[in-house]
Image (cartoon, rainbow over all chains, first blue to last red; front, top):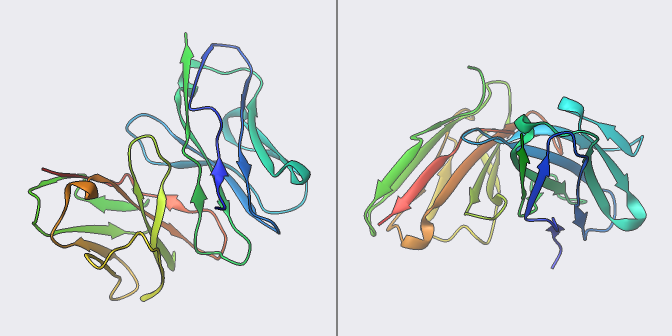
Amino acid sequence: AQSVSQHNHHVILSEAASLELGCNYSYGGTVNLFWYVQYPGQHLQLLLKYFSGDPLVKGIKGFEAEFIKSKFSFNLRKPSVQWSDTAEYFCAVIPPLNNNDMRFGAGTRLTVKP
Amino acid sequence: DTGVSQNPRHKITKRGQNVTFRCDPISEHNRLYWYRQTLGQGPEFLTYFQNEAQLEKSRLLSDRFSAERPKGSFSTLEIQRTEQGDSAMYLCASSPSTGGEAFFGQGTRLTVV
């Protein structure tokens, strides 16, 4: 079945460590890609999105993601995490020819130790 | 706050009862989505409206589920004859355009006992 895969369920890092969260999707064709973050007790918020153009996308709070079409990947990165980055991170894809159905990965819980 | 608003935030109901949730989207957004999220999973698409028209429904949406958006503004999601498996967070989102960013509400957490 076509899907969005996030390989890491729970990542624990110390402050200032570098972060990379994996996201792979299995849809062919042109897709729109997103990373959302959910801080404890809050709603899902957009971190960044990719529709076209430069495959390296910069988002809020120092996050960036790289779209690698050949690998069907859209990994999220941050060079130096902070305690306040503790949250759940969701990769999402809008498949080709279906602009109504945003498919989410299962999420990665990030815990940053002070 | 001009974001997406959902009511109630929490709902506990007995199995077999009907429940209704409300979503008020961002006012200029013509697209509205309902998702369901269970523990350890990402949101799953349930249904989608463009203005007042319900244009798509997931196979996850059984006959006990119905959604409306009568005037193209707020939306309601009703679950009839609730079952324990309906326990989940129900999320509403809105967006201004096709394929664009969706803005999410804080969700309604349903517990069926």
